Length: 437
Image 1: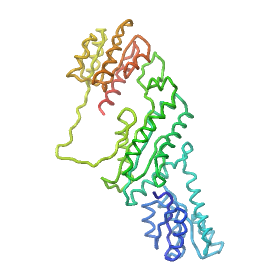
Image 2: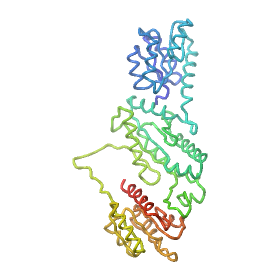
Image 3: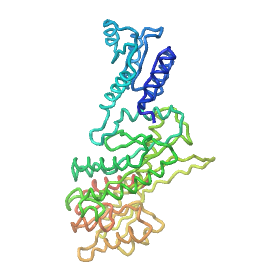
Image 4: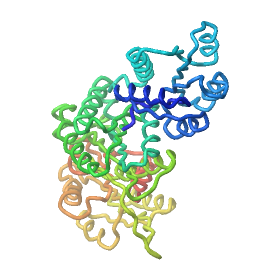
């Protein structure tokens, strides 16, 4: 992985070989070119961290420096001038033109290496995340671009922590930072020195590695993350498997424990030539991983297609209503139909299982029943844990305000009565969109 890249623009072959050998001995990748036009191609493809330009070139080096600054304003490499001159005015002129250093030749090999490495070190020091001490998005985008142009096989992983905002709201910023630092350490422990790890945002990690080990690493990360995640919750929340955001008198769905989702793309099956294309595919693949419940990864595969191979998924807008209050059930049915849903209504708990067959609702509005029997809880458990209907979303309405009891029974939403229709149908819209993704 090209982590430190220097571009040397110098028409002198012997000097170029010497400088290249010195810097490569310090772990720096060096591109050497003999004219400025060739140097511009390297700048565009690899975005070097530092450019060494010799005044032995036939061009006006001061104008070349100004051009470099214009063309690389987003990534702004350091610029050092190599010159036979030792005149103060020449140094001033080049520095005023935008150079960061002026190296008078001949220069001692150790001094040359130390000065260039010091520049590189300072350029990277401002590009670390304060929380994880990993490279930030500026460096990560640069590494992706270099991977595209390096003409080697690679896999890029986009890794993030789901439900982190909810976790932060409940447990605070310090606990959230600790969780991210722990996950960062887990990721780093799974990588080789030649792999790259950085961040695109506070909770998005980027990893670049050979494609043959990407899936093994993804499987390990999911296992390791799931193993440690309970340690970041209270004992009650960890045992329950979800957390509460509000009191028993407010509507609330389950807030799952944090999980990790990983999207992986590779140039094994598809040729990538542009960073925008890479980021677009990476985000799309990562979103597919996020659609699944819990920790998951999705890896880009070879695409095999034929005529009429794509089948459009039919949108399921079926709602089953179990509401013993006849007036309320009529009102719910009429409102749902007006909003474009297909509705089936039952008034007895014993009718629910039979009503589901052939109708396949995406959402069930389920009343708890009377406070003594709470038959709705038994039906909810059966649907979620004992039948093949676990994907259906259950909105549990009740006058018994015990949120933990309801959500532990498998309900996707706890909705205490009385409730506003606008609140109910807001949740219906959300659940239906998620169901049909």
